[in-house]
Length: 250
Image 1 (tube, rainbow, N blue to C red):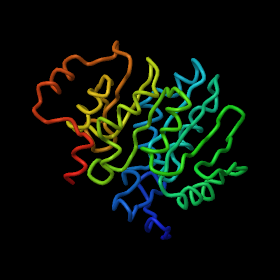
Image 2: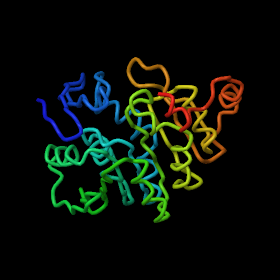
Image 3: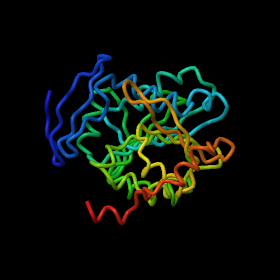
């Protein structure tokens, strides 16, 4: 299956767990690992952010960076159906036509459509909002509304393909919409990306990577979870944190 939007071409790719992902022509990269799109989403984000435990303790707000094919929404909904509290799931996507395709493919119906977002409920305890546009712009709405995020699924295309969503300035914006007990997970374990997170005010820890990837990253706002040894190693590294000024050199 292949389709085009104004922003590029998408090619469906079957992954090892039977779930499809898409190859983005715009970013020349798959949205998920071919080792298993759904399993990767569960490992890196739903389980990585301890979403089930958090939703059993209090209402939570999740921010997903990169809608992909909608598996973040589906996997989180499926795993939290029996949780005690309400979940608001906010995702970001630059391609409005892809958002429409994802909603159609996953039968996300009864949508409320605005110029810059689509909203719908999957149950009386699971609310979804997809912000349409450049994420660096769309999250400003969350900052202005003083919305506090509990879990961040940092699932943008890789730093080499989508660098503006990996700089310390980007992570500072994310940190500004977190509370004091928030968590962010990502597949990246790059030193320059971890140092960007540190400078933005996150405490970086190791997380087991998915499939053949040895290490991923879990970052907290609460200092009690800090890995002092890892943070000391990062501080000693001569690799600079990735920043907006590096974007001009790419």
